[in-house]
Length: 271
Image (cartoon, rainbow, N blue to C red; front, top):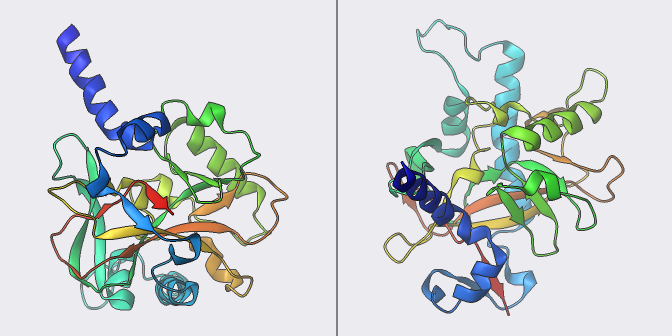
């Protein structure tokens, strides 16, 4: 019994340690091969924000169009059921899905299920509540391996359970503009309307499984269509947060074929 508990704790620790700053600091030299290096902050982005916006808009417009028509999750004349993944394949040329990772200790992972992801494509989004550096997150961060830290100290809580889930739903309801939804809450379920919103389950790379995607910060521009914001899987924790909404996307470092699992670098060194 005791041995079983220790084994479970060991598995959880192996998954969590890459987000534990003291461990990272002590082991950074040992993990040199799996670190991502950039010379300066301005070079951290692999593709321009305009390209990220373009990819998101292509997908979101198809999702919105089909939702308005009432095609999702209903039987159509072709005999096939349209889904968010069909919309993703139609607009981006590939699909991703969450399932059991190839890593024995990792639990869930994210795989390319259809098509080919070209280099430089926006592959996934990291959903969650956005916290500015001065906002409290202590309670939400307890036993939470899904807190992502941006270069400027902004945090994204991508946990879809417990207190984090309640906080996100509360903030999303607060920002609603009458009948218009300003963020997506479906990523908290097993069937997200935005199929990109599974980035929190992408596992860390290793010497055996090198990174094929990287994180990229993306600030939603003011020109982003009002009606398509319903598919953004992020919401500000503070009701009066200044500036554009921060999102984090995952961008492909090379071509990725169907059947491949996505792997990222959990931390980046900026020189």
